[in-house]
Length: 210
Image: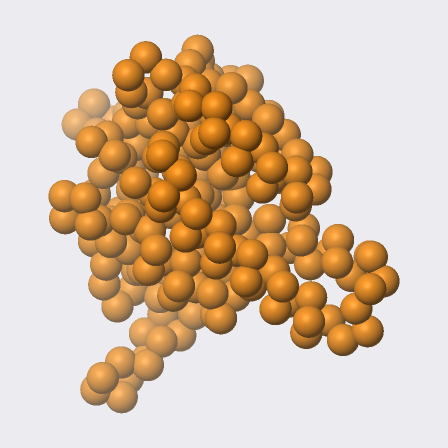
């Protein structure tokens, strides 16, 4: 199964995605492009391996190496929004493209392939992404502001469509006043979300693929 978890910078994407339970005695793997893994020094993650990468192809290679190893029950790809930006910057710096529209098309196609690959790789995959707010027209002619993953409009629907779960990171105090983090997975005009696994309205991070 796969999931796309999104939220604003600092909302808790990395911290919470790495809380997902391991299965069958395996470990989890975090592959990170944006250096957000540094926050995990504040938390106990004994069953987590971390790989930081600085190039787009390294990101893809480490993902494939991870799932082909059969060592991991879940691989967290952190984060898809930054991977897009990184890839475009690399292609621009290469000097190969007089028309950058060609470079954008290459990245669009590769991110679509990556989303599809995650559905058939043999282990669970969590993508993270930053959040975006856009105005969306409604059937009655009105417009509403919607929270959605920060991805180019040309690949947003295909990426989310290939995910079993799309969730927005949120938090609220419990009865004792302690802050609890969860994923909103009930879609609406204001929030892009879904849960094909169990049709839940919200999910605790540990129970994402249960």
